[in-house]
Every structure is written in C-alpha cells, then in structure tokens.
Length: 487
Ligand SMILES: Cc1ncc(COP(=O)(O)O)c(C=O)c1O
Image 1 (cartoon, rainbow, N blue to C red):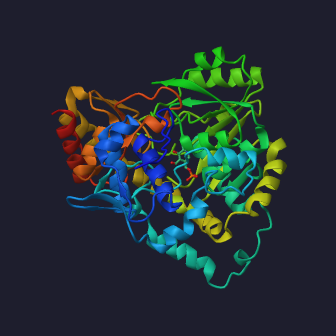
Image 2 (spheres, rainbow, N blue to C red):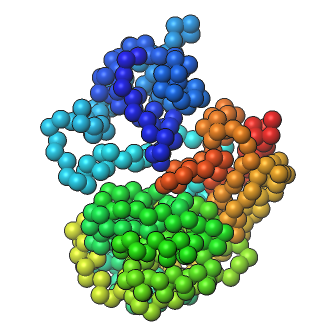
C-alpha cells in the first residue's frame, strides 16, 4: 500500500484512532480506491514502526464500519461498495488541504482542521467502562413526560423566541437558589446565563476573553473538551500538575511570569483524577488570581456526587474579587442531550456574555427550561440526586471492591470519593493499546487516560465510568481485566 500516513505519538488521540482516521480519509477521498487490497497488519506495522496491535485495532474498526473487508486467504480490501451516505459526507469530513484545495480557512478553521477532535461516539462493547453518561434507566421518565405535557397543553409562549437570551427568568432564579444551597455560590439570578451545556459556556467565555497567543493554565491531566476550545482560539496552554489534593498551586505560582490570562480548573472533582481541591489550596489560588489579575473558570461538572465527605464551597462563593466564572451542567445530574448548562458571571460581564449567547444561537430551548423550573422548584432534582447518590455509591463500592479483589497489588485507585467515574493506575508491562485490544476481545471497553494528558502521557492509567453498568457487569468486567493484567 503506497500511502503517506501521518501519525503523531504526542497527539492526544491514541495511535490506533489516528491510523483509523488516516485510512478512513484515504478511502473517502479515493486515495485508497474501492476494491484495493491493503497491506497486512504485520507489513503496515513494520513500515510505520508501530505495534501490530495498533494496526489491528484500526483495521477492525474500519471493518466493523464497512470500509474494509477481509477475505480469508486473500487479505484485506477496501469495500467495493461503500454506503452512499459515507460517500456523500466525504467532503464535509475531510478538511485536509489535499481534499479541499479551494477552501480558505480562517485561523480558527485551520486550527480545527489540524486538530484531532473526537466528535463521534464509538460503538460500544457489552461491558463498557466508558465515562460520561449517567444511568439512563434510573431517570424519572414518567415525571419528565408529565412536566413536559403540563406546558404543551395550551401554552404557546414557549414556541416563540425567548424574551431574554440569557435564559428563562424563573429558571435562573431556581438555579441561583439551588446553587446557593448546595454549592455556596453567591449570585443574583441575572448573573446566570443559560447555555447549551458546559461546552457552550466554555466556548463563549474563551471567545470573549482570549486572543491568539494569550496564556491559559489548565490541569494536567485535564478535560479535553475544554482544551480543544482553548486551542481553537489560538491560546498558549500551560499544563499544571495535579496531585491527590488537586491542582499544585506551587507549580502555578512558579509559572506565573508567563502571561496567564485564564485558569481552567475542576476543583470539586478534578477531571479525570477525581482529586478534590483542598480548602487551603482554594484560598491560595484565589489570592494568586487576584494578585495576577487572572480570571478563573471553575467547571463544577459533577459536584453533586460526593460520597461521605462534606462539600467544599465552590471557589465562586469564596471569591470576593470577581475573578471566578462558574460553570455547571445538567448533563450528569439529568441527561446530556438536554443540552442545558449555566454560567455564573460577575455583573460587569453579564451584558457581554448575553450578547455573545444571542449571536451564537439566540437562546436555549424554552420548553425544557420551563420543565426544569418545575423539576427544581418542586424538589424533584434534589430528591433525584439523593437517590442517584445512593445508587452510584453502591456501584462505586462494587467497582472498588472488584478492583482490590481481582487486581490486588496491581492497582492503585484514585478519586473514589466523588463523581461517577474513578481512575486507576495499573502496574503492568503491557501497553495501554494492548490492554484495550485484549479487553475488547473479551467484550470489555476500557478508556486510557493518555488523551487527557497534554505532555508526558503515562502508561497504565485508565478511567472507569460505572454509572451505566450493573454490579454483575462491573465484577465481570474487572475479572476479565485481571485475566489480561495478571497473566
Ligand atoms: C470536566 C467536564 N466538564 C463538563 C462536561 C459536560 O459537558 P456538557 O455540559 O457540555 O455536556 C464534562 C462531560 O463529560 C466534563 O467531563
């Protein structure tokens, strides 16, 4: 196969995923023609200087999606008939200079074209430790339907454009009161802007505050969803180490001669290590931000789920110098396709952010905002969170116990006190790709922590989401992992 393939072992995307994308683009743009025989896994691995497992993983994904097919004894071929919709979507998916010579991209477009942003959900395996989704089967569907139909009866106002781009006033009032109770956030309802999830909140703030070349400090490891937004805006990123008490403030202070305009942090439940930023560090951080004139984005994405420990007040509530922009979301509390999050901003930024929200998408859907008002004001949210905290706590205990039983000395567990995932360090000589591949063969989907690191990507760190699994699935999944790691 005579094809230039670009792989970058320092990129956030795992090598097998990069190879998959390269081959997929080559098929969609016709550089690998239909029916063409491609190299064997062994030959391609050798020519690219990567492991055969990496190539096998990429090939298997392409086979399962209908791009490649194998014929026993003859080898692997590009399918002679690709699904029409794949062919039709080719120009949209392939931004590369070769395939779109006429398009002159903006700086933003060019950065996105050159950044591997995983915008798809991979197909799942029977037991998936993928992180991110709450337990859908526990969601109070009947109640949600009842609340939806309450507003869909004869009300017509939700069909119209909203009167305020910043969000439905009763919802902002309900959120302000919920945040004051549960997170010690101090704000007036008009300081709350309703956004399309945390992602839009991050995007709006970054576009308004960051010019290309501005410095942003962020946790290492950290949340790639935020990192991609910062990169797309042309920011210069300063990764700051995290330990068991959260962001290491000393490292931040030592790097402060650089122009750090913004700090992005997940203090309640550091993503993905799960560390909780201690109170002394919170106070130190706020003092540093005040001295440096740095704004802080506090992403409180799953702070509702804590097990046994009293919550530490949000940075926003401890701060008296208007330097914190607080972000929350209903994606973990309720469900991610709701696409409702919120941004709590200092008074002097309210008008600016509201105008930016209006420019972007006018406002968030009104019907769901109305339903959320009932959900919050009638006490459903807090009782649902209490119920789910018990549910997740039980699953978490099963997972921790299974890890300790099956993997014993081979595992270190991190961040088990909060959230709906935890992180582990496996003591093994196997590469992450090898472990993922072998687990997949046993029907278990594992998630390596490597893409969450910007610089030195350690081996053997995995993120375990458990919210959508049963206790039996967790035990089975970990016992299968033990077969791989302890053999
Ligand atoms: C750190 C962090 N922030 C925010 C989110 C949620 O994003 P959204 O509200 O856009 O669904 C996630 C989801 O995985 C996350 O891990």
